[in-house]
Image (cartoon, rainbow, N blue to C red; front, side, top):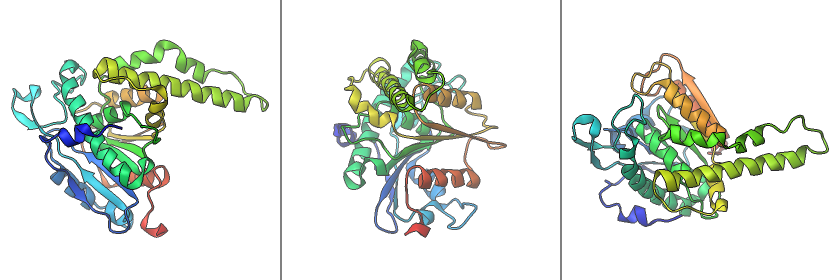
Length: 307
């Protein structure tokens, strides 16, 4: 996975890093939303009280390193050209893909920057021990990092966690579902014991094939990035995704978030989509409880009780 974008991205402020309390086993890279910064976003998130002891994420996962990168200042089309921290420019959130051509440059630049941070952490703890994600626009950016991810033969990441976000270019990506590949993947009829293992293998190959098509579509046709060999897309396709959204979100309608989750699932990714009643455009303690469960059970981050 290339690192040049990380080292050339001098216009990105340094990330906020919270070192692990114990031996470093995993890294969680979380991206803030538009108009925020890594310091304030990270400080609030790591001090938010969970509903059960240990009462914060760093206390529950003492071997987990937290990285909160900072977006650079960009002129905002939604705010009359005013400069504010954002991973990419976006004109409107209703619908979020209106004027999406203006999103490409920022998405591409930020992918290069975040990919470099991921690469550095892979060198420390291994790909399967690195989790990425974000809140709001940070969630959207993290999804595009994953959808263009070149695993370089190192395999999947530990997971992606997204709060209150959308899938950029969702209508464009959804068109790939109709090519028949996923339909074959889902409709083999009733399995018999003699043929089930063969059919399972065929289903997995169909899933990986569609995901590879998706990765290179996102790279080439959406972001004008060079394509990669199909075998280098398996890491992206095998990375589990956990997404969460408030039912009362006034900024990003829940249907947009749900459409993104359904599109990703139909394109071959393992996606969990959680809805929280009476929650607006932020997060809550019980939502972070569920995030912690994903980190422990799916991403394999050791809890304090296991050390």
